[in-house]
Image (cartoon, rainbow, N blue to C red; front, top):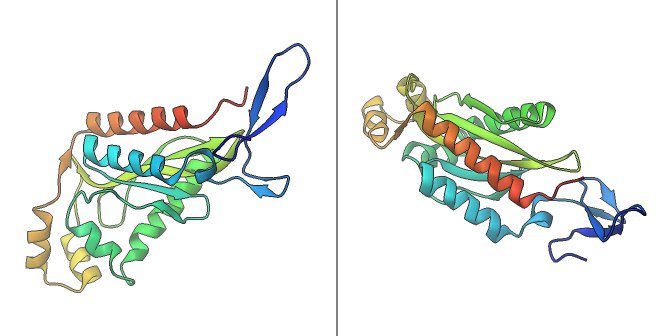
Length: 197
């Protein structure tokens, strides 16, 4: 057995060796999860790379919406305020759940804006055509967008002047940098997930 929970099963005659068989479904009593294809430390490293290289809040979320690893760093001061409040956290979770479902059904990266106006991207993680979760980033303002300071003030129960100060911490990114981040995360996922062929 592979140390990450992979199962080796004999492959058909005419081939040699073994084929890694990983599934999101029950296999001999085990349900496959993201941490079965890579330990939490590997996912932490990916979240850190997303932050270090591109400035996004990097996050890894399993198929049930449970955070495998939270952001390794914050892209701005608004996001931790939103995530730190039970009433406002729904903005993040609803965007994540909706985008993850789209990523699952399309089997492609999804790029959208959350209700606040930050750009968010998720890349689906599949093994043997089974959805395990997403890796991605958020918290950056992409050129051409707009943040809703009135909505943020109501969401966080603070004055718009305080929101304007928090908005000074928001980084702006180009479309090219966003596309590079998506490509980078997709390549990392490809490295972590074994081919089913």
